[in-house]
Image (cartoon, rainbow, N blue to C red):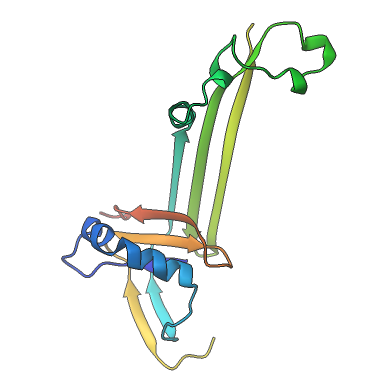
Length: 158
């Protein structure tokens, strides 16, 4: 997990506009080329989630028949008894993600929901980091590929 805490007086929006390329490079480097040391971290627990309706994006990509009662063709997925009955179509495509950071660690989850309807270590230095104002976080996999990111704009007690 990478935390990007802007200097006081510098807004998170400024950092995202001006330094996004460097932020992505750091998040994908997974610790190579960085100074090693311990960290004294002050970080409030937080839980952040998002949910997006993917149907508009899919329609913009030209995927439209799936969502039409008369245009979707799922006959290869249906048992023989249902093939000539009421049509099946997709009514919902929702992508959701959640990240939780607490005393026990960092947990992330993501899912895509599709609804179909049928009609009817030892340190040399110690760095201090107090995340008491808005910050960015990026969680990368073991290959250094960012898989989750978000911003924390409002902290408990603000």
